[in-house]
Length: 353
Image (cartoon, one colour):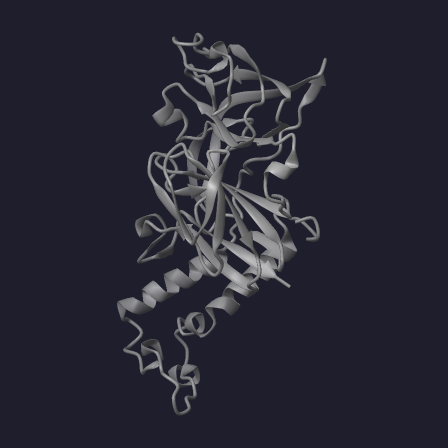
């Protein structure tokens, strides 16, 4: 957010990190304090009539019990969140204006990508980012995208749910020749329809897309009144397979939370670029779902767990009214938490005063 002060060498906001760590510990409260191996009696809560004592507040076994190691591991993950890692995804891509056409350039290449602290994988990226940069235009804009292939195999780009001429659809040997290593190809079309969309490889896609050749394509409506008003937005791209379970190219504790002020109307744009279904669950506040695949729903609905299948996009609004750090995760639990703590598809929505 623009009102946060100070960044580190990797672009992460230091004051936000301090707040999040303090907030995470505050939200966890006594439960996290109980993980520490020091004096048992000092941790036992005073109780009054009508109050309960949780099992973890009873006299504990000796310190070599396995549950202590599990508690320690869970706590370490929470205290590390949001962890610094190399590689910044989804930066806005600014166009050049050439004779009234918005011109973008994408370069496909490989690089080392730190998914979570210390875990390095090979990512296939657009402009060194995984997911690739955010391309944002307005409905009716003419755009031209020049794609350079620095990979070791051919590729192509499909503009998911854009009404493009057939020769711009990005399917090798059907609508175009593949973009061979060292070659370039230019896509040109008019942005239509508006909404939350995606671009991604459509060649050897099970490998190329899951390794990172994907990105958000946002088409704002020419008439803003056709969509609900909002104060801030959060693009959430889900992926799996090559890099594990990721949100915007990172796994917990390296996923980046969203920090907003209380009263913010937050628009969330979900995009599933993976091979699996991911039901996303927000703690604390409901999601008001108003669009699917970029198109307004005739009957919006309220949800706390939204099922997102591969290729789908959903738009939801959250009225950020409840203070605190609220966990946000895939509710296929093996994608989010295990005996060593939370991992993969976990992040947080942080609402501050």
